[in-house]
Length: 393
Image 1 (tube, rainbow, N blue to C red):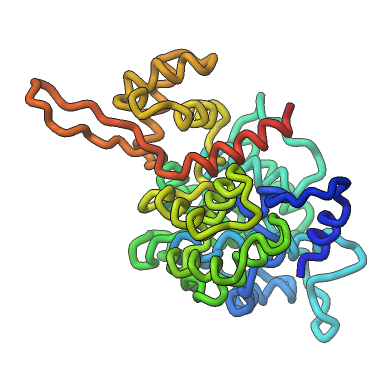
Image 2: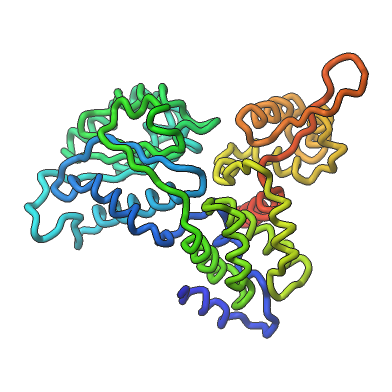
């Protein structure tokens, strides 16, 4: 039951029923404070971090599983709650049956999609554990490292670090992370989170535990969709049969399930439907590309690259028939230079955000042009991007 969503519906001043209350709860890039039915995983993670309740650090660990299994949702929720308990002077993260911890343990989450550079990595850590503002310019990475060491040595605190989305295209490579971890003081322990099998990443050479996250079970995914719909849609807009259909199609991938539901919702809203129909859902399935890239990756891109993508998804197919043609068309819609746009398009293709689909041979000499296709549903990106830009205005 989502009491807040129910109250919002009552607060509407007009009598007209509206299909969509707000889109954000449907976003596959949004993590809720209480992940749906991930109690077993939370218990396993709590088993791993259990030493912190006595003021000690757990060994380094690796959490892994497929896209859309809820890894990030659970880790962000757990670390946020543990850090809140640390910050709250009226509570403690240890129980009354345990001895008072020998030292305070802090909890920091780092998303390597957003914080890819060494500078950004150490800036995020230092900024999270100190009240002083940390400048983003005019300070070196070495200075950040030194201040981090000094801060932890002075306070005597330990630091448990969750490093998410490791090993993804465009994020921080495992080799670089190992170097960064080696530069951390001994009062820091880390939990890496990724999709790569433990046997295929060098990170597990330094870990004592590997925790596997399985895809969502079917009934859990149905429940997740219905809960998100309760927060986002008018009452009765999504029935259980429709949620079951989406869950069947998604095969345990919550990201793709929410992506399809988002597209179906947007289609239904534009058609003035009062509920999400079977046709809306079928059209949504067609709109989600095979091997759909995580929307979180797209929204973690720098602002200018998102600007290029926003223009790209509005282009006609003829204006995306090659990188050169797309560059010219995007330049007409933005203030960016053509050279910058072309470089961005190649970089986005290199990390799998867009796909370069080679045209059939036409008998002419030279390599056929490559049509640009987003590896994510344009509907979802367009809607969420415009909502976010609207907030900033």
